[in-house]
Length: 262
Length: 249
Image 1: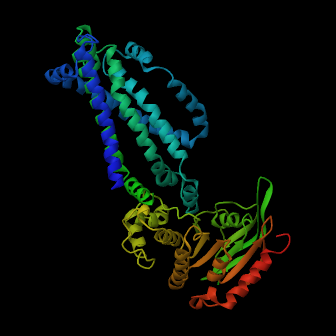
Image 2: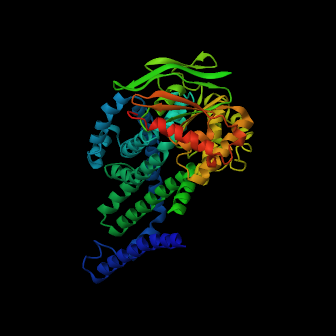
Image 3: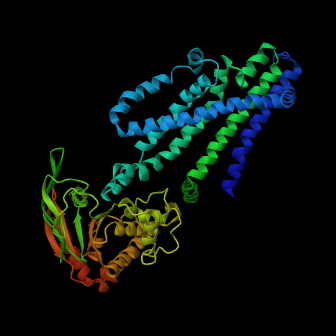
């Protein structure tokens, strides 16, 4: 009963805060503190969203495709590098500091270079998503591999397990919760990265559309795009959460047991 | 018939000698305890027996064949049950068979045969977090048994359990050992547990740890019920306490 009321509270509080922010926004635009053409009211944004929906969907499909390609490629590369770094300490010592440094370079600074190098097609957009998605997944996985219970590793060694068997039975499962945490962060960045990359050139995509409506000073449509980016990012994160629940069913029981013990 | 023998095993870590000239033996069907205070090198000795650690000198023989530094020859169970939380109980138990190259389906079928004997019927498809402490320990013991059906090494496997569960598992373990017929080397610092379960006790003392005394508990396993309430038990306990309390130990 207590847990249920806590769960309701956890959902109601952010929903309440969100409603409050929308009301505040509404109030500001209604009173006219900020001119309507610069800050359209939530109702104007919703109207633009509904009227422009087919157009928005066409562009969203392109951005989401880029984001998904980038996420998949970034995940595969991150997995390969994390495995290699776990296996060869020298590689971890050499590469990890460079990876950390790459994270200090702002995405917006790399995007124009990628466009110059790769043109206006999908490639620079996907590459930017790969660069953004790669780091949280690689670092998460590496932490997970390192966090595997050394006693469990010793147990498997005592059974005569090979390095590969230990990796498969102990290290990968230990790293999976970390992997999904990293993937959730990467998923939230993926669409934004694709959109930023599209700002700098291209033919389709939410970023391209955003640039067009910005030039026309159609602020309501800009806000509609932002709203769509938020929705798509949240959806991607939700999908990652669902994947996590399906792939790691034992966590559900562990959490239930922990709940009962408290 | 002699199952396991060690010949003058010594091991040091970072130039500090942990155990010196340990020679022990174990016969088929026997339960032998290594009893000693913390730091006397019990776990180091078990690591050597399991092949996880290579000794500086000395050898380990299983059925007359040298197995020094060769993991996978005998089964080893640590203090924690170490059931892998992501695997169902059946897959945890079948793990040693899979490691040895058996197909998952066959390993499951083989493991399944013992669930009844180990009082685990109906738990096959559960995850470890859905089981009680005693059940987890029995599942870990079954996994250990399937790892090597001749000899099991136990490193204080009952120490994390409450007293009632521990006593229940003691009786259960003696019973299952008798039924299935395997041998056990048990590490413990619990004098009562050592007397209650063992056929023989090696008392490890000093730093580096050495075998100070060998004690035979000549009470048949079938008569161990309430053994800890009898005068003979107290006499054994006093004898061991006197050894452990000798000056310089």
